[in-house]
Image: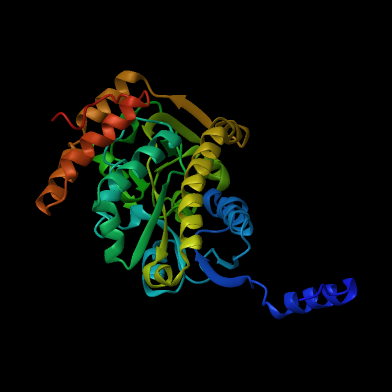
Length: 357
């Protein structure tokens, strides 16, 4: 066969190229929900970090792009409704505040039942997430809620006590009504006649302002964001410790339809988001304390003796937690020991050994 003239050869080449269909980028809708407002640290960083990182990874191949539809601040669900909302498919991806669901997600309380160990969000986030991936228990709990677990988030450096009146030690909490959420209300069992009042972070300002409670357990960054100094200008720095309260999950039916490439991107970025948010939390901890003081707040440091006395006065909620899981056939004791071991390896030893009793 002879050689085609250059012009005819070019024309034939172009015809061949145009006859081959190009690879089209598939667009995948993702509805993200949280009941907390967009100004909350973890929500803000989902928009500013998680979403761009997923987009960046998917852009490397160009096979898929996400159509993100974000709904926060109660537009679809309230803060306590994210778990149910994702379960029902009202959202495809959610940031579940796990402290509201201790009965459905009991293993998620692992850091909450071990106070006075690690006032470090990064260390706790890694330890809990590793436990979730080394033991099947946590992921099975989310599977029962029609969800796929991606990663644990820690958005507080350490719980502290905020008060409407001067406070110098845990003894000043005796007889007081104290706002809290989830397992941290059980810390009050070590304080004589203290009464816990359950509420969400968005409720605490009004609860303190109206006198429904005199004190609240929360953390400095949240106190800054929600202007707690205006209604509770006294903080007892007692370092109850960091606690995992946020888990990124995906509706299981939605997940099953996602291409593997997108699933991998979401899993990888969830871990990056875990570390990013924890790092920001620690970076902002000192500045948040300074902002609280600048807004009129006063901070008193609790003594080590006071911390030890408070921890010793509590029931061993960690052992109770482990035994409850054990009774269900889950490795509660092993999880507890492994978790405390991970924190010790990271340099954190508590004032009470919750696993030794």
